Length: 264
Image (cartoon, rainbow, N blue to C red):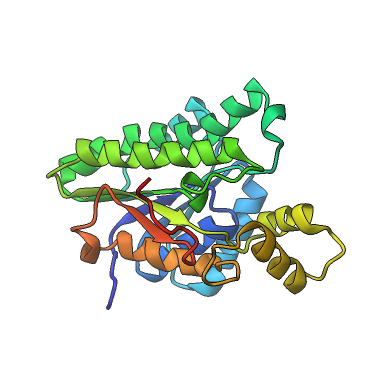
């Protein structure tokens, strides 16, 4: 399958590292003009350098803004008035005993993981529907279905993204624009490495820590390993392509077989 999104502008939020940067790199490799976003310009510059190292001909723009706020969303749209592909990857996570999660923390997770996506969809979806083509993807998580006991506030936010995706897919019905969510399983990023060590202890070598974490905390995984960011990027690039024109309103899985079913 030859995926070509040349001439398309793709915004990937939370793309200064990890899954977001892998997605942006994959889209650039398929020909898209890629917009990297994050709060720090230095990290974005480093990310852009890394992307160009992987894809020397890439057309890359960086926009430093806080997309957890309405002002940040406005700043992004001012810099990039229109987009053909929007990948809402921005998110925060971390373990917390359920009864100790404060109101402020609940709001922070909802604002960052859910409202950041809603704000950008509100801003960019109308232009996509007017042009008759567009792709919106919200990066959810297996935690949307298999709510982790150690971070139910995170699971709540990812479950909400499934509803957001399905609802906006209905809004875009029949326009040539698709809206989907991607259910990503436990993924190997720097932040997740820290999380894994928090859960199983910081003294274990990484390979042993990863295996122990999967055995104790994610035993349903059929891969029995963390997913690499590039494996998620491969699915996102496909869903961003013309070949995925009949997939919309879906929760598409790249979870290593962690979820038995997305139907309760």
